[in-house]
Length: 411
Image: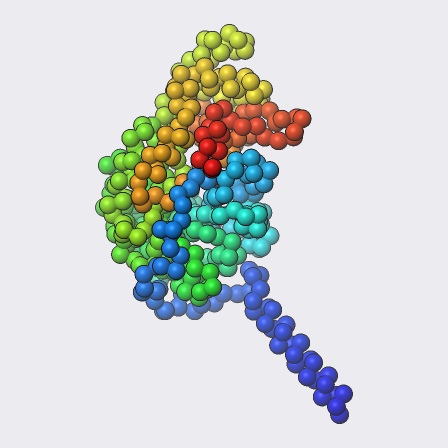
């Protein structure tokens, strides 16, 4: 009888332990009920103060955008950075037949904190590209999206330092719906995320809203933008906002920061997860290549800048040639210390917390680079597309000029 009782007791203990392990696992195959994802429990009604952002130092990090699957720790170490940002495309994961735990972007993102990096994650909702209208909060689609969002948060929550609800809400929404409808959608998502945080009190991740674009232009300072900023200011569970500054003039940086500084609480912060002179670069794509450069490297002197860039994308160049192209282009050489100028302007605003700059070049492999193309590839700290790989060290080479300024601020 004693043996039988002992066996029964051990079986009972095993079952309890097994059930506990299953309940605590992060397996996204386990169902999240609608009640769990969309309960009537209100979001916290106390000021967000568990993480005191005022004690954090201003910082400059790197941005992988959607390319989290290309995280390279050797490259990261070469930048000396401590902050890494990227975004996850919600619908790309929602439509996938793979489980979240097997997604390459998520797996690589989860490795960052293990290597000692601080992380910023934006969740992108690209309804415009999907050609889909924003769902109402009580709709079937919204409820399904929020159930999946809870599964996604379970995967990334404990590996995230700052979470942004959105990527570029007013760009990734149909033009006709960039009104109160976009505001209502992101407010509803914010409530779901804050509710998730309330259910995970052991990991209080600061929540930001954004990113807001082009706020140095009055045409982007719309009623809907101001309405969403008012929500941020009034909601005690929101730590601040995210803005993107892709611009042409340096005064656009303080202008954008000033606009939002006046519309958030004193204890809230501003992060800038994307910034660049992309619009300035674009204004020079149709300029002729430098005559000095063309003669020295036997490049067709009739070529425009965009034609040489297209050539370099299709046939990566020796580092010395790509450097010569940019150095002999007055429009680039005169802005080669852009990172120093931009980051100095940002740190001049007391609400500023952290900015992240593009680490890699990105452009479709089977597409021509045209005079109308957005020249994001000129921004990267690394020239992984336009410069040949270092065959001796087998590593990606730095882009011209920017890395010196970037490392300067890591000290």
